[in-house]
Length: 466
Image (cartoon, rainbow, N blue to C red; front, side, top):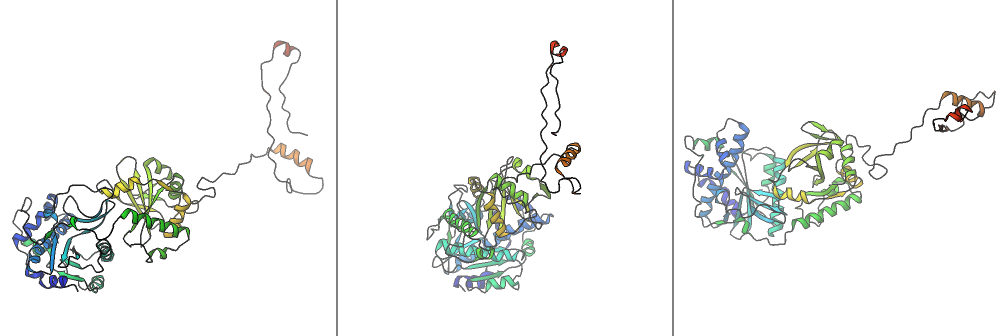
């Protein structure tokens, strides 16, 4: 185990929570979150409680890191973070602060990862921490930890990335936590439950609490850490996208996309491209779209949405569809359902500035054939998969001409002429059906008096030929 991580896990209790400390932690919360800390609405209260618990751990760590030289620094966050000079934008790569003081790594403006705490050891190596209040979704949690380690290791050139897990509940016996803690640079700190911490602030006003940023010799700004290698996320994404399309063309199996290769494993979402109209029609015909339980007819899709973007999450190989609304500034994120279609999960709005702007730049580039191959590779046939790939390259199949029913009188005369007597054959048994002759109608015109008197021209129906 890392010396720094071991020391923190052994000495964390030397800084116990006090009423002043846990009240200071509320400074890192939004005003609305402070109001919800003791709310009777359980979901809102749990969300606020998680944000507050992060502040409590941060305040305890600010006091702890000054007691040892093994910790080289702690990144400012929350109310102590510097003011944000620029919002998320295309081309941003590296560590940035959000407008509420959260620490994020961005790739081409998109938030790739968020860190509850960021530390440096005495050698300048970066470590990160996660702070949890419940053991739910531990499977996804493990994948996130591994991704963040790869991300920091790649950008900042570290073979090992120390990690700390702080939890208000005892998760030491959880099998996934046990697996995470087997790695030599990881550590676990279990604190008391949030209910005990809340008793320390009962009766104290916290909604308008303020405090000045403390002076701490170990403070550093996360956005000032210099990357040790070139980090151009868009270029890495394009490399991974081209590799994916090449493997699709080579008929690679879904399992092959999870195998390691020579590209850095930090691009998890591949934006394959926008769909041409023919591909969009074929997709919604084979994989029905459902939004909040209501199916969307294919004819309504182009009326409601101006663009469809197809993406794939790696290494799981889960396809995602983004629908650009014509009436709102948003993309609807559609994920697979159990019936062989796609269902609405959440919206992507300008609030997610970097990713939203990236989606806006994507133009149609995928026809029905390649879109079909991508979906068949990762999820197989859809609910109505038969018409997905038409034979004529994405156009609607041609309808066979319907022959008019032959009049009985004309059919009887033709049979008498073409069938020898006494053979007993069914009418038309050996002959291919012939299209009925078009009956020409003579143009009617008003007869002149002289023609009528002399028996002028009369319109005659020639009838069937003899």
